Image (cartoon, rainbow, N blue to C red; front, side, top):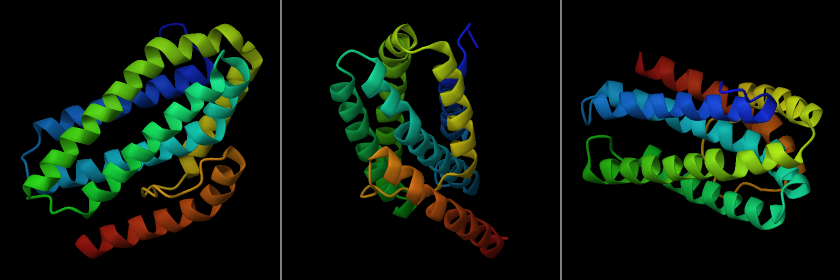
Length: 186
C-alpha cells in the first residue's frame, strides 16, 4: 500500500475498493439488476466509510493538521453532499434518467474527494500525527467500517462522539434491513 500505514493505508485501500465498484458499475448494463446491486454495494461502502472518517479521521485532522478545523469542516460538508446524493440515488428508479444523472454526480463528487484526500490531506496528516496514533486510528477505522450503518442519513450528526454513538444503533438496524431486503428479492 505504497509505504503508508495505519489510518491512511486503511482509508486509501477503501478508496481503491470503491473505485473498483465504480468501474464495475460503469461496465454493467444501465437499468439492469447487476448495476442496481453494485450501486447498493457502493452506497453502503460509502456510508460506512463516511462514518469511519467522521468518527476517527476528522478529529485527528483537527488536532494534527494545520488549519485542521477548516479542513475537517470542508470534508464534513462534502460528506453531507454525497449522502444527500446517495439518498436520492437509492430512492430513484434504476431504469430512469434521474438515476443515471445522480450516479454520475456521486461518482464525480466521491472521486474528487478521494483525490483531494490522497494528494493533500493524508500527507499533511502523516506529517503531523505520531505513527502510533496513525496505527491506532487505522484499527479504529477498520472496526468502525465493519459495524457501521449502510444507509445514507444526510441529517445525521457530524460530531465524532455522536457519530460513534448513533453508529452503534443504526449499524445493526441497517444490516438487518439489508438482509431482509435481499430475502425479499430472492
